[in-house]
Image (cartoon, rainbow, N blue to C red; front, side, top):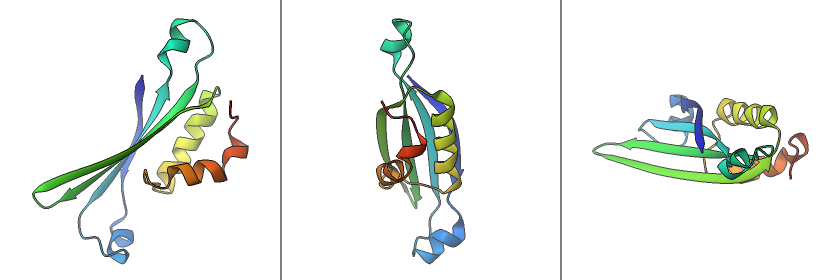
Length: 107
């Protein structure tokens, strides 16, 4: 099950510095393994990051889903906040997770 967590539009100044002149929206989701919930076991959580580019007359999306990161929902939410605050895109989320894995209880 995917639960919406938060979203943000990337800062225009950052986009302009990268030579991008169209808006980009980032959405962050918490993933809950429904099988674990049904079995009444402690749920295992993951994340999903969706990037939507609003290019003139075209919308382009890209996403990255990482399941089974932690059993600690609070840590997952803290990590999702970190991703949002730093405007982490789908392509970079695995690297950021790797860098911060010591702060998240991995299973």
